[in-house]
Image (tube, rainbow, N blue to C red; front, side):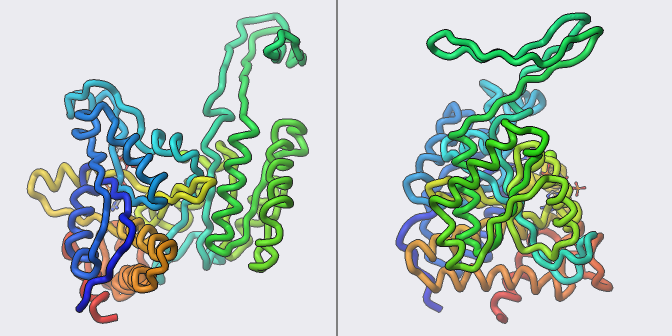
Length: 401
Ligand code: NAP
Ligand code: MG
């Protein structure tokens, strides 16, 4: 069989631990036999990030800007324990944070649905994609523990020295204070990433805040979304027959639960943090969540939503068998290959990505799966496979499709 040719390289960001092992298996078993794979390789494994003073992460993000599409393996975000384990020069920042800051992107997370793994919400027959605004609000807060009587004010000092003051509260006794902020630039960039992704995936976009209570802060989010929608995206949405829909956050939550899924839910930073865990859990399993970072200019970086699966890696190092689910990592590859195929007009690449995804789903639906999936699957007598045998089973299904 002739291998599928590529014209533009994918930016390949290798990672850490168990997912780094899966990465290699996926390439060898599911990609290299079928595609003349063209990638620009960046090793984001922690050892190499440390050697390069994390320059490799910055370089990989800049390459993503240049080529437009990247696929990323899960990576370790160092903490104190990792400092010793990897003998690090510094506690390097989260690669995802660094890449997100350079691409100015928004993360979209969606579950992979499979028959036999039933969402807790029974009417969710289609995926719900969560888009989380990743800047500001309570994540960049300033807090004070108020010791006792006194007055609290919100003060803004302009460059020319003029002040705006608002009384927050006059304390009669001890209490607490919190200051949060956001910027119009960041909100606008979030809005554009959401509208763009809705068009790209032909799904409705929902957005909700608490603008009735937060008449300036949350209302600004609502207004910026509406202005950008009217000026830049309305026509395209109407052509595609998709909808932009704004409502109050409480109403959104009720509607989401009653819905059948199949839309993008744009969330402010805190809402996105909380709701993405709720949605992921309700669909069944973190190892079945995909994730893509989309910049407002339309640059894409695909990855799995889970981490490096450290516990499995330590078993693997001891020579013990692992049964780690590679589906989300495979979907990171298929997402990136499909996008590359679309951008370069290579329909064989798009078809291959579709086919490989179907092979993953069919393998599990045929009863062959990894351990964690078998625990939540309603399929009787599942065959539990180890990490490599599961990938080989997907290859067999792929060959037979
Ligand atoms: P994790 O790697 O997502 O794993 C947590 C647990 O979830 C695993 O121990 C395993 O449970 C289960 N799990 C996750 N993915 C699975 C898969 N594909 N197949 C089977 N089971 C899976 O989270 P973590 O252990 O908290 O983090 C490990 C490292 O990953 C950390 O260094 C963290 O910084 C990093 N991380 C990276 C990213 C990223 O790069 N995007 C995201 C999150 C975390 P059992 O052990 O019970 O089987
Ligand atoms: Mg969370």
